[in-house]
Image (cartoon, rainbow, N blue to C red):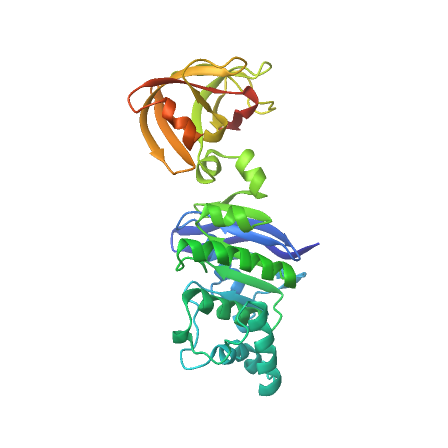
Length: 353
């Protein structure tokens, strides 16, 4: 049984449709990420769940009870925004106690629970400090503790890591997931950062132009995207437009590359157009053809070194290709030279148009 259910949620601003017929079921204790570019509808959906926006049509339910008509404070939902929203004149413990105070919890009991929650988020002994005395990561932990202290039925996180530097952001990803698992609270995390979504989520909901494009686990999204948009938005990919020349033999043709075989698929029939996806890490770069693989010649245009690995970008005819190689392997080729790239047929994934 779903813990949170969205049924036919739509939102319009005049003639602009921000959301169109969004349906989604989230299980109790699940960590689900809303992922998409700016303006895709992910935050609008979150705000409708929280009660800060009203849907034009559709239904939001938690444990089979409708939320419509309930104010945000009546929904038993914890929420953390990117700016944290801490009261500057209150201490960390007083900030965490605030939602309990609004629910009539006596001060002594409320502050005791606040200190317990601060300990859970790794801030034992910080309860007396004011926000200005805390780092960005510590402020975020206080905001998280405040959102969880009243034991909400749902936790909403709206781009909470956006203001943190890379190292602290990665550290907080681990901490948020640890706390979520410890409490078992159903969580929705909103981000435009695919690496955050991939590393933290049980499932990811990919939004584009107000619609859900795909709902799946991180690995399913990466290896089996259902649309060209999902393939391009999740990780790096080589997307090759083809025409299916023999569906039974899993053969297609691209003007630049020629004939290509793809992994088993029961999708488009012979004669139809499709897109083939090959992830850069599934392509091997070499001086000469490699036996047992599909080989083509590529002219190298750009090499981008990252230390432990490198991205080699080049062209096969007019088809741009990206190859991810280990840093030591890139020395075999230079920009402007030709090389051989190759892949296994089973690493070529077919996306229907």
